[in-house]
Length: 205
Image: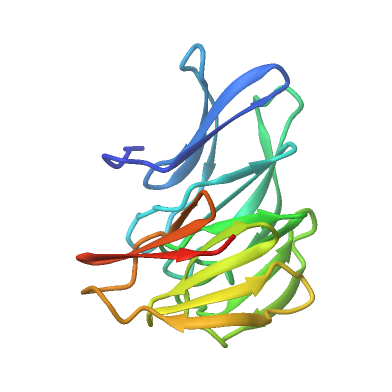
């Protein structure tokens, strides 16, 4: 196994142990943050061995995912964090760079080859909806809402509701240059969106 120069990772505590989980070319791996000892490795690779998405941890479970049709899966950690078991897997949520968010027990994101926006039950993996109303892209969440920034330059406001992808606000980023790939962020009620050589700020509070 070899690590890319910059690997997305998440850190969490379970069973009294601080753990760091990350991707290598072909595995999802976890380390004891204090000792540096590798605790476990779970195989996961895709066509180009590229894994930019940060794994998501919540209450003893870790979701890993990447693009090019590979999708991801849900790992359940043992009480001491030293081992994992695969609970469910999907190829539908194969986000290449857009990430995903967990809101009130549901996972939201869009795909790469599977371009729809989708919602999954965190525990069971059941898909509750898919939608092509907005192009695939990046997602972040705040105050029960999803902010979806698509590769087509759409910026959509969507309620984080597992019953359906309902757009309540939509605009288009018509400034800047190149691809619409940057990840927006929210700070003090302001949504910042970078598009190439330009930045926009939207009051969202």
